[in-house]
Image (cartoon, rainbow, N blue to C red; front, side, top):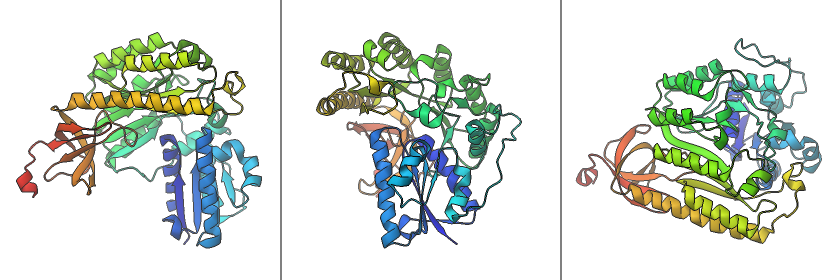
Length: 453
């Protein structure tokens, strides 16, 4: 039996693809192992920006060295990097034995075996599916019907509800890699979610390049999907990657009144200067974003956002406007990135590209502002009691580790707390008595220090 190691890079949408690939591998009779014991290594790559491509290439080259010094006999690259750059990679990294694009995971067993035998052509047989078959739309639907081997905590799972993107932001390569926006059939998503809930998943995290556009291409909507998900035995439903112009008053109210949807939303606003927003082909304005965030905060909904600085044409004045905009909307959490010039995008052809040193300086300053806002949010919680999902133990701190309902895995802060007799995957009431720039500290209700000792 061959042992296979899989390295997953990039976003949570890529993680879901990796989990489906892992299921195929185990069903094919192969063992999953660490790279040091692997006969075959698979790297599921990301190609969104230059730093992601470089990480993917560096990882492939590092794994290639194991073919000379270790047990590994075969190296496979999958996902976005070969989807966009397959021809170049074949010549640039000859150590890689097979390349599979973002819609070719069904060929993974053949790639592991190195078998050149032709596979029978797959076709989509889901009666609820609107794809025409024979194209990437069909490939997506087929792949999304494959079960998964979860790589998250067993009580949490991501569910990809759509593929591709139609927004065509001038800096983004996603449409050229993943294609047009296409939603999964509503019944399809609900079937998968029901199966995950039966398997013990309590937190379901909805992901797509644009979650808010779900269903627009097939006569359904995100609100309909949420209605269906709320009927399942889930404790929490979380929304990531919601474009600001698509966040309606109805969606805000849905989040606010639901006892299952987390009072949290991830909205990538990118910038706060109207000139730059227009150059980015973002279909909103800073004023509308401010109005939207005010509505969310008024309903008690925490906001995470993504901010980009150093976009072509961004002057110091534009950057100052962005900083003031961020101070005005006061997001609870934010990721700050420097613009990355991507060949083939409209932004790459713009004039006024910002020097790297200026981009680095602006990222540092804006990041400091955002960290300060998160610290202020954390301080506002001191003395309050909140729900915390227990996930792990920090032995160095001698504390349990969990997340509040307003914290996403990996990207937001965590809650460290003392407790007696608790179980992983359950929610506990925790009184917050301290914080730092990102994390919260406290004790669960009923905690007895003497009992713990």
